[in-house]
Image (tube, rainbow, N blue to C red):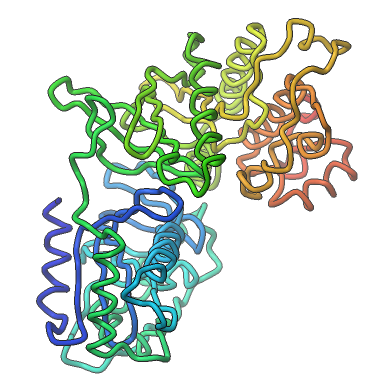
Length: 484
C-alpha cells in the first residue's frame, strides 16, 4: 500500500466513529457472480447504509465531467481516464448482488450500497465541473462544524478540452469524506431510508464473510508473473498489469473469467474465445498488432499475456487529451501517420487471411515514444481466418456472421466505428468491415472527435452525407482529406 493511501485510510479511521453500527474494511477484494476480481479500497457500514469508497491520491490539476477526467501533471503532460465513479458503481452493484445471495441476509430487504470517490491529497488542484463532482469528496476542512453543502462552481461553461481558460478559484473546495459517511443527507449523498442498526450491521458483516470478502491478494499469479492492478475490463474478461520484478519486466494479462461462469455453456464459450484469440494471431509478427505471447491456465480462467509499456493508453482516452483543445498539438502529417499505422497493421493481417471485424479506438493502444506515438491493434476476439478467396471483392462468403451479441459486448461509443452490416448481414465481408472501421478511426484521428455519439446519430450522418464526412467536425479540412 502506498503512503498516500495509508494516510487517507488513517484520516478516515481517526475521525469516523468506532461504535455500533459502524464497521469498516480496507484493501479487500471479492469475486463477483460474473467471475470478475473486484478490489475495494474502503468498505464502510454506517447507519445510513453501506459505502464503497475508492481512494484517489492525485496531484497536479484535475478537470473533467461525469464521463471523463483529465489529469495535468507537473511537467505539463496530460492523461485522460474514465470517471472512477463509473467503475466504483459497477463494483457496488456486483457486491450487492453477491451479498443478497448469502444466508445471513435471507429475508432482509435489499441492502443499500453506495459508491463514493475520495480525493485524498490537499495539494490537488480540483477543477471538476459540477456533474463531475457527483459523489466526489476531499479532506474535511473542519469536522467540528456543521456540514455546509458546497456551492456550485461559478464557471461551468469552459469545456474540458480547454483547461487553460479555467482558474482554480472558479471551483469551490470539495465536501469532506468523513462528513459524507457520518451524515450523507447533509452532503447531498444518496442514502437508505431504512437505517442500519447494530443487528443488521452484524448480519451484513456475516454476509460479507460468507461472500468471500478477503484481503486483496497482491500475490495473485499468472504463470510466473505477479498481478499488480486491473487495467480494463469487458464482458467476460479483465485485463491486469503483471510484472516480474527480478527481470524488471512488465506485461498485460487478459483473463477470460470462465472459472465462475453461470453455466457450462458460458464457461466453454469463454475458454473457446481465449483459445481462438491465441491461435488466430499468435503466429503474427507485426509491430502494430498486439499478439498474445502465452496462454496460461489461471484459477479464474484462461489468461493471455501481451507485451506492455508503462505509458500505453487506449486510443479513445489518449485522443481526448492529445487530439483536442489546446493540447491537440499533432499536425496533419503526424495524424496521417497514425492512420497509416493502423492501415498497415490491418493490411498485414489481411494478407494472411485474418480480419479483425470489431475494430474501434478502445481496441487500439497508443504507446508514446520519444519520436512519435505508436498504435497497436488488439482485441482480436471477434477476428476470423478467412478462406483464401474471401479477401477478394467477388469471393464467396464463408465466414460466420458476428450476430447481435456485439450489441451486448460493445457500448454505444464503440458501435459507431463498426460497419452497418456488422449487425445485419448474416455473413459480412470481414475485410470490408475492417476498412469501414479504419475510415471511422481516421475520422477520429483527423478531427479529434468520434464520428457520432451513437448508432442513431451515425445513421443520420450516413444518410445525409453518404459517408462519414470529417468536414462537419473540422472546419477548413481539405476536400481531398474528407474524401479519403
